[in-house]
Image (cartoon, rainbow, N blue to C red; front, side, top):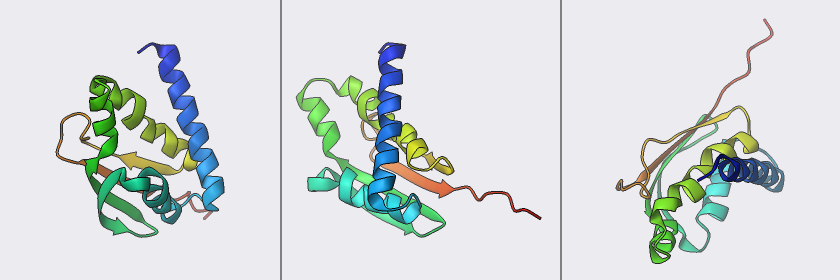
Length: 127
């Protein structure tokens, strides 16, 4: 994938994060959990096991991903990570610049699950 295409995908993901933060009425972890449940998993696109859903941390594993099925049906699984999975990090930057995403595996890349870990950094205190 060219740098221009990768940059366009990244910018689109950032803008999508900004739009969804507005639609959700906030950009905290509770709103991110709603995005996951109501948008990303819409129509059964993802099967998810939640481990923590609090104001401090959002942790879950995706155990089934129909996006993988789609890319396989198009004989394009090798592009799936670039076109879908890699967008998640830029999306989070747009949703909330203080939010971080850690993910060490994806089904698209051959793992059994995608492990999502979201946190929000606290701003420095004015002491």
